[in-house]
Amino acid sequence: MKFLVVGGLGAVGQAVHRQLQVRGFQTESFTSKDDRSTFKTQLVGVDGLFLAVPTRDRGEIARGYILDALDVGVPIATAEKGSLSYHFERLRPSLDRIGFSPTVGGGSGMLELLRHPHRPLISLTGVVNGTCNYLFTEKGKPFRVLRRAQSLKLCEPGAKGLAETVNAEIKDIILKLCILFNLSGVCDECLVPGDLSDVLFAEEEILRLLLTRRYRLVVSISPYVPRREPLGVHGRKGSWSIRAEFVDIGSVDFRLPQGADNILVCTDCTGDTATAFGPGAGPDVTAAALIADMLRLIEKRSV
Image 1 (cartoon, rainbow, N blue to C red):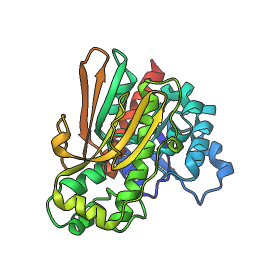
Image 2 (image 1 turned 45 degrees about the horizontal axis):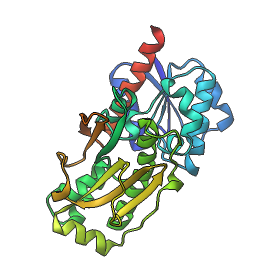
Image 3 (image 1 turned 90 degrees about the vertical axis):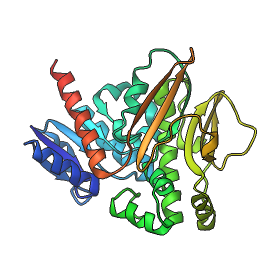
C-alpha cells in the first residue's frame, strides 16, 4: 500500500513516515511548499491520506485537504484539531471515513469510547493534555522539566518559555473540548472555540501552581455549573458547563495520570462509568494512533 503524508516534514509527519516504512508501506510527502492545485492529482493511486499539520487559519487549510480526499474517496487519518473543532457540523456526515482518534487523548482511545456510548452521557471529566500533565507531575525544577518535555517533542510547535508553553497547551485544550463535546452527543448544538473563554497565565502564576505540587489541569463537561470562577477556561452550551481548569488534586475523584498520560471518565444516565486511559502526547504515540485509525478505515472499506 502507498500513503500520502501531508506535513511530512514535522515531528509527527516524520514519525508517520518511519512507522509506515517499517511496516513495508510506501510513503510520499506533500508540504506547504508544494503547489496546492496539484494536491488532488497526488491523491490518485494512494490508499490513504495522513494529515499531520499544525492548526492554521481556524482549521480551514486542514478542512480543505480533508474535503478533497473525501471527494475522491481516499480515507483520511488526521491529528489536526482545528478542522474538527471549528467545522464539526460540516464534517459530521463524513466522520465514518475520517480517523481522528489522536486529536484528543493521543493513544488512549477516548474518542472511540465516545463514538459508541451504550447510554446517554451526563458528564465527562479527565486530563486530556499530556504536555501540561507532564509539566505538573515530573520531578525536578520547573524549567528543567520543561526542557525535558521539549526534548521529547511534547510541546506545541514554536512554544519556548514556560508561560508560552502552558498557554499554547490551553489553546490546544480549547480545541479538544469542542471535539469532545460535539462527539459526545450531549447537545444538539455544536460547540466552537469562540464559545469558550480564553485565558493567558503569567509565568509567575504558573510557577506558583507548579511549586505547590497540588494542582492539575482537568477538563469537565457536565450540566452542573460550579459557583466559583474557574482557574482556567470555561463556557456554556445549552444547559451544559464546559471547563478546563487547574484544580487541587484533593478535589479529584478519579485516578490522576502521571507523565504524558491522559484519562477520560464518562458517566452515563444510570451512574455507570467508562474510562479510557493511555499515552496522550508525543510524535510516536500520535503516529501509531493515526496508522491504527487508517488500517481500520481500510479494513472497513474492504468488507
